[in-house]
Amino acid sequence: MSLFGGLNDALLRMTWLNDLVGAGVTAAGLDPASRLGGSVQFFVYDVIKIFLLLAVLIFAISYVQSHFPPERTRALLGGRSGLGATVLAALLGTLTPFCSCSSIPLFIGFTAAGLPLAVTFAFLISSPLVDLASVILLASIFSWPIALAYVAVGLVVAIVGGTVIGRLGMEDQVADFVRKVPVSGEVATMTRAERLAYARDQVVEIVARVWPYVLVGVGIGAAIHNWVPQEAITAMLGQDKWWAVPLATLVGIPMYADIFGTLPIAEALVAKGVGLGTVLSFMMAVTALSLPSLILLKRVVRLPLLATFTGVVTLGILTIGLTFNAISGWFI
Image 1 (cartoon, one colour):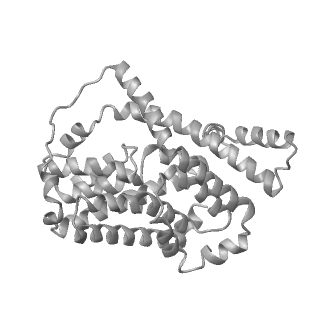
Image 2: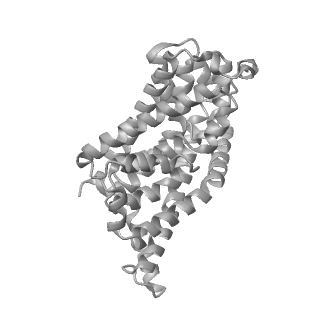
Image 3: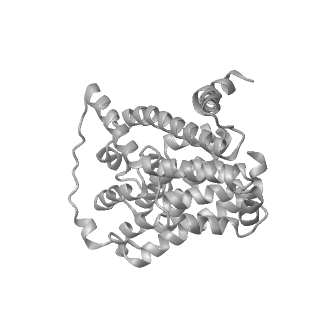
């Protein structure tokens, strides 16, 4: 095993933690190879690993993000247009650990500041879909090629979606009050102590927001991994089923969860033989097209623009899901 592989197993996959939890399960009188013992080991190991990684990653990333408050992000994007601005907005979206609902106030601020729709929607799509913490968590569960592939496809959806919406000329479909929201041009400066306090507060805030989804997601993942027969999963969502990607996308839309809650489910589905593209489609639908976020977005845009946004993103997710199912052998 290479040095990188060893470090990846120790620091991200935390194989030592899985062994430790397995020993604890055995000491408690359960067989890790049994359904019940395996479920307990899966649940305890994934919960501890995800929260440990979340705390460390959010603290580090939030410290970096303290240099890029919304006002500075607007300033970076202000005055830019075209594909370059759209790509920059999608990249900046990856620096914000926001769910789809909490991204909408930023979307309002960007629109009020006069940024083009292509830019604001690229950010709106990218922000909940891809962030640095989720990339590392993906690598801890799957592999770096899959994690980087997820980032790439998420950025493609954001850039293409923003570009298409921008070229349709639907500026009149934004609610009138949005453009009248006062915009502050001041960029607050923070001391090192304030940045550390901000990073600490972000850890508390985000963990407090996502812990129910993590527990539910890990619970569902444990049930799928140890109790649902592989034949039943592959019969419904097998890689050879043409309907697997559309079904996973439709199932994901009504749900509301951060990507951290969907990762254990994705892990269990892949272990049961579900195609990588199907799993990615489910994750992307949950994070980018959740029903609560669409309801909130309806308050700031009119129905034609909302339908266009939903349709463009859904088409992008379906295309990427089907493509990745076709080439998943490159990653797994």
